[in-house]
Every structure is written in C-alpha cells, then in structure tokens.
Image (cartoon, rainbow, N blue to C red):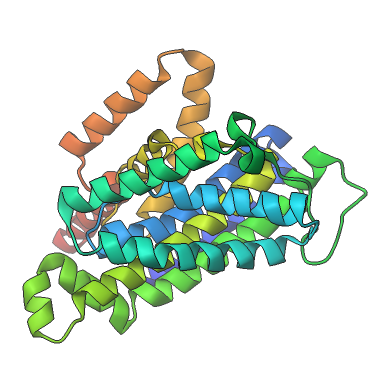
Length: 325
C-alpha cells in the first residue's frame, strides 16, 4: 500500500469515526465537535497561507469574525435564514475585503507581515466593539437558527438540531473543504506557493509572480476562515467581538503548530486535539492556559513537526524495521 492510499484510507476511517459520535457519545461531545469542524475548515485556509506560502498571520481571526457577523446580519437583520446563502455570501464578502488588506500585507514577509495582519485584526475588533448601534458592541449580534439544504428540521429542538442534522452537515462541509484544499495545494498554484516559500527570489526568476500568488493565498484563506466563522456563529448563536481578538488569532496559530503545519492534515488534527484538550483542561484546572502553553513548548522543542509529524516518524520507523527484517 503506497503512502497516498494510506492517507486516503486514514482520512476515510477518521470521517467514519466522526460520523459515529452522535450515536456513541453524549450530545455534549457532538456539539463540541461542531467547533472542531469550524476550526478545521478555517485552518485549512490558514495553513495554505502559513504552511504552504510561508506567511504567518497574527490577525486571521478577523475573517472568522466576518463570517460570524455576516451570518448574523444575513439571518437576523435581512431575515434570509438559509445557511447556504449566508455561507456563500460571507465567503465572497471576506474574499473581497481580503483583496485590499492582502495587497498591502503581502508586500512584506516575516514579522512585518504578521504585525500588519495583527493591526488590521485589532482595527476590526475596535470597530465591532465601539460601533454599538451597528454591531451590538460587547453584547455582539444574535445569530438565529437557520435552515440547511432548504429544510427547517422543526421537529428538533436547538440541541437536537445541532447534534443531529447540523453535525452531519458540518462534517460534510469539512470533507468538501478538505477535498477542495487538497486539489489547490496539489495544483501548479500550490507548487508555486511552496517554491516561493522556500526561495522567493529563485521562484521569481523561474516565472512565479510572487506577490500575486501570495495575495491569492491570502484571499482563499480568508474565504475559508469566513466559512468557519459562519459555522461557529450558528453553533454558538452569537457573533461576539472576542472572535476577532488577537488571542483568538493566537489560538489558530497554536492549533496549526500543535497538529503540524508541514502536513496537510496537521491543522485538522491540531484543531481536534485543541478542542478536546481545551475542554478537558477547563474542567480540571483554572490554570488551563499555563498547561496549554507548556504543551506547545514541549511540542516545539521535542516534536517541531507536530502531532502529524510524530505519526509520520512512527510510520517511517515501522517501515524501516520491516525493511530490515
């Protein structure tokens, strides 16, 4: 069995295992995993920018907030309670807003790019927090229940809706997002991003339009983040300014490093590990941030490739032992 077949098989087993959660676990865990689906979709886009283009954004939660607030406006203000309409609208809206922001940011790399994205993120947070008459300020905006696939599912209460139809809907969205991103990173465009990440000057000599490729990655990552924000907003029922705060952007970076940004499935693994670890630590200790920081420090020092890299290392060692025997 070759590596590609093994990866596909593991992915299918993972999807099947997630699909069994509502049947085998209490509803709380099904609801909790919706957050994982939201982060998984957002981090697929984030890692296109970070892992493949080599640009670390410290303000990417801004686009998650755009997705949540956009859904709140479409459903709560405009009264359009079809989630697919909101999903497409916030992705397009985030992509359009990302064009001028990205055009300014991708002119720089390294810490300068990170600081610029952080500045824009905090500007958006200030707008959400201060313009109370538009955004509800620190109270946020309510995201009412919406239909999915044109169906209301009126027979379900809120918990039943989230842990039943919406759970499988979000699982399907994650699978579709994963397939689309897989095609992107394995396309010539994805190879261009990896080339400019490793050596931008050489890539430019070879004909890669560096700034345009970085801008395209920034716009795509913004659209994926907005889709994750829309899922998150409907799951919580509220679009809150804290979704945009810099600490939330830090959580995105944490999850990506935790899972392994050098691996396609690394951010998804990191999102699942973070959501479950965060929930368990909060129930055990009030110093959960300290423990999460310690986990990150241990990973960076001992396993810089993250959880996915650790699995790859174990698989490689197993193959070497089999070949030696």
